Length: 284
Length: 305
Image (cartoon, rainbow over all chains, first blue to last red; front, side, top):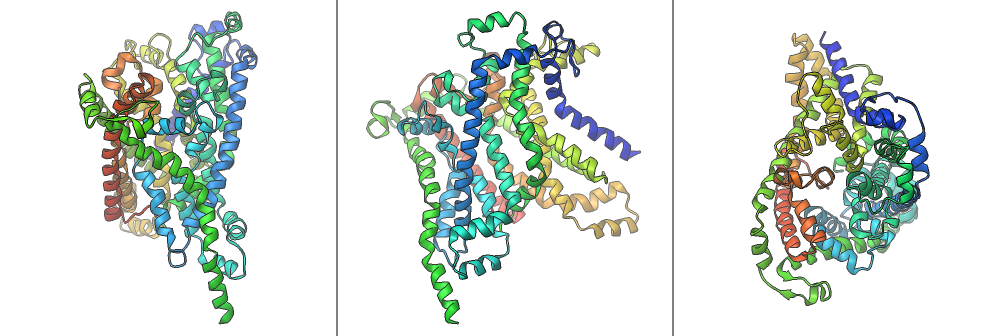
């Protein structure tokens, strides 16, 4: 009896978690009359691609989507290229590498104490990165949490393989790329997923560091059109199209399209991140 | 023997390579984390953009006096604590209960499917969720109010009524993150020794007693760990979420330190006062985070490295 209640409860909770997203999907495929009459719940009414046609012909949407793809690809690569060697160095044995303790503290201090929004903004400004694509990537290029996760994962691997390879004359880079990286798939998959999602979802950097809406990545652009609609950004071309496409259906289509990349990468990484997160959270 | 010594020598000599490997990350952290840390001194300056941090006039505690005269400053500090603490409590309890219920299911496929679905909202941004919530919580056309009207409940203006706004924040935040929060507890559950359950069954313990005397004690170290670590979040009420859901009509109960810093600093361009509020937050957060690590070390035997 309990088991059945439990299963029903779990299913209901799971449905509750994706219900709003299903609603968005249904609205995006509905015709504008039904959408504005509030009769669409989980299944499209008056099925149409109008909203997607509208979005596909919106240069701002396409442009910001492509910028977001670029930021995500470049940013994730930079995150990984920095995290791998950094975590490797921090995972060395103190006896053989006495600087380890100093370096670890150097990294951990940034987790304990931070300058906060204003000094960070002013630093980015001073460095000359305002209105530069790199302002979306460099300030968060070293994700200390991910580095520590990877470091702990490395330290949990058996030390013998590593020593054998170093004694055989392999350099640290070879050791890292040939021995450590292949053994750390769960941790690497976890931090890759976090990096992809983090960059894709980053809307705030665009708001504060970029002045020109033409440079906005997708989430920053959506922040300005969905959350704080700024009428000056809407072009006259849009106003014509808006007569056939309801504001609600076009918003829904944009929200769904912005969710899509995450839906696509999620299954690839999902099987790893439980192991990756758990093994990386234990000190080795 | 010689070979071994040579090996050890060469390991020692290659420490230079290690410094080179870590250098890029060190440089980036100096620029984007350590320099802003020193940049906090503008909290004590009449900061002038053209003069910069080095040449701006020092004005002692004037910025702090100035922010204490903000009419809503105490309310904002209170809101921050209130919202953050409610989120922490809900964020501890809900995942634990959900993990316990999920643990009762034996079918691995079912379990995995539920996990996959409940983790998902964690990966969506507050911009997208904000857009979705503004729509479904709308008093005139929102799905939630349509549902409530079936029971004869009058429409609630969830995002525009300052008496309910903080609770909407807590509910939606819990909704987004409880699934992801279960990961750590589910991992703890898989580590519980199965023979303990067998012994409990032989002693005549039912499902409830097994949970009470085997499962919960088995999860206790992780629960204590998460409780201690959550202390570090007492001033993090959730900028991303609030920024995308609030509006001036709910400032009274929904404005928090981070949103105030944003508006003061980046909208009104009062860098000094904004940095002063941020400085206050950084100091308290530092104390809380260090305390949480100390407690985690003491009670849960946990160290981050």
